[in-house]
Image 1 (cartoon, helix red, strand yellow):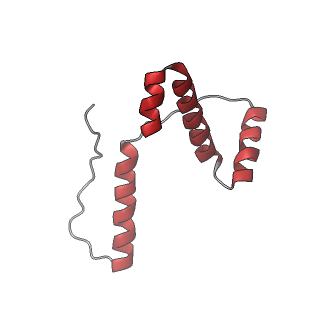
Image 2: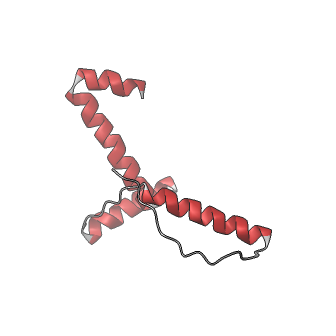
Image 3: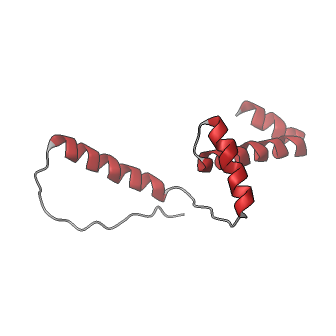
Length: 93
């Protein structure tokens, strides 16, 4: 898959304070990283989402992070249970 890039308008040379220049550079780098990520969206009932938010709160993490962690760990468990070869490969990871 080709890597996506945003087309930024060139404004010419602009003098910025060092701290602001560093902050803007970091923001641009973070935005570029996000282009490499895949977004997933789905619909859930209000009760399910509230349950997930409560569990995430107990762990002290954002619910989005909790969801990614829970889904990833479950996928690993399913794969390990499904095939001994996959289990050996995943045990190395």
